[in-house]
Length: 419
Figure (cartoon, rainbow, N blue to C red):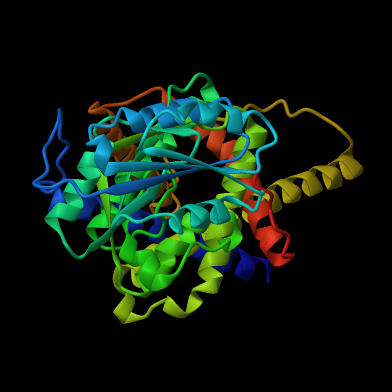
């Protein structure tokens, strides 16, 4: 019986590893097939026309960062008479409202204060006061590059059927090892989201300066609470209704990342909980041909990641428990002793367990490749960065905890807090 269980466990484990390699290979093939389309522009560009755009900045207790956010919007390389900025204070209890009132002197800036209701209510408050054909959001902890908006709008100019365009979100001046590790994750995300954009499989339109055609909200309705991930749910809703989403890889938005493990855990718990529960809410789109790669690749790949990681974590703790149990039995039988025999290594023999070791190495190579390609897109730099070491070590230790918490919270219907 034990042998059968071990064999089944090994088969499941190898299956998850194979599927993980498949996802990475699929991304890499997509990259090589479309590499000529992936252009990183430098300097200023000009549009044939400059449509009016409204950017909503929802803010709650962001007194330390909101000024930099608004300043970045005012410095955009976009005609200021075509740019409307709505600052919506969502019932802050600090000095956020006082800070944003310092921008009252700008003609294109409007300031609002409302009772606290959550980010999605602040966004909907702004949408109701929008009269432009395009609108977007900029989170109050992020800053837009001067060329970000004009580059995003060039995608709409190129394709009338594009309904939303998201930027490349990168970290803003990491100051610690923890933030350096997050930088690697964000670099990889630039690559992954571009690949998803190329296959029509984007599943989240992030708060930092995703721009929409107003038609999206006119047709599909406003933002929803969506398990505190309104930017994910609106993307799911758009995909379900066949509204095209693209990703502008050279439109950069710099975001402040969590500076403590506790804050990072809360943020990633919210994101992962949101993915699990939005996917449950939209389970009817899974494996439906009419929903394309979003249905057949993006969501299944995300589900695979959650299930595989949960299984590997469970297997790890089971192995640890088994080792502890055997040591206890050994202690009760022969007492405590230290083996005098040292382990030996035979350089002419390597037990690969049916090439398993090589597949693991291949998987790591593919992940590192995705990080390098993302770094090239986000920084115009290539090659290895020591931050990658921080990423693999730190995320290997702490990521299992927010995964376990997200699954646990979903099972018990326990909603995570925003902060």
